[in-house]
Length: 354
Image (cartoon, rainbow, N blue to C red; front, side, top):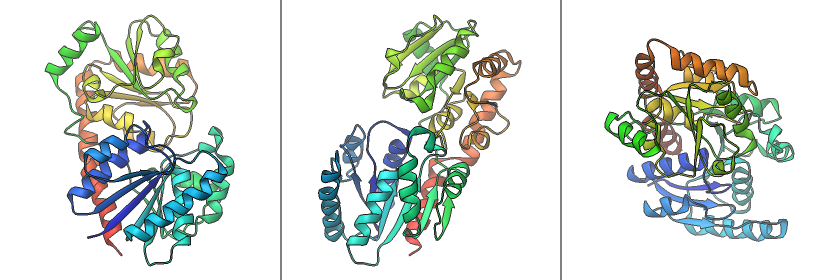
């Protein structure tokens, strides 16, 4: 049995965190022993992992002094669990995984996981430089997007080996359902004949909600939904409803027609775009990360921070004569290219390769 310890920056709501839950749960069913460590607090996803029978430990790092003590606890965990693979996730997770791996002797393999692209714009420049200096330590650096890998190589990463494994989407969970569509529209007060664009992202500068809201103000004929922690605090145009943090996003997608992403930077492989497309929605996204690869020819990709371009693309999608065909094509693209099973197989093959 291959034993894997995942070390992630945190387990709050977010795409990387959600994907780790899906990956670790799927790997456990395939016989891989799984253990997850959060560098910070347990976060919302800890309960999901524990419900799947996966142990979770939080290091609760909040200061430099606390970081040194936490590093010692992580090293002790490695000695106790004797993992075959240590898998870092995100910058702090990669850093802590690398440092603890150096402290504890052994033949285990160290993998890093890059989940973003141009994050230096988000204030991560110093951390990126630190990790770049250590990037030769892992056996392999995995990225979830080619754009993300290229960005980090351009910022000094010099790994021994690399791989790109796009996120996979659970196409059984995220699927169209006309009955659920009617139920959700009725619950939200959305007319049956309205065209609805849904935007799923926590409130964060990288997600650039303001551009999406500005675009919706320019397209009053559309209805919009913003879903994610903090969205209930936004100043909304009359045609947009904020739903805050929801745990039933798969059901909410089914009441929409368009999935929109207005991210300004930082995205690698957008879960929101992929899940929306799998749910049968036409994608309209800004040109960040691997958006063009995900969308293909099923939707539109527009420049970042350009409300006019985003509004034009949303209206064009809403008014196209073959909207239902476009929806079907979007789902087909996910089913054919970006399933969760495919991503799990790629990780399993790497973990078993040693």
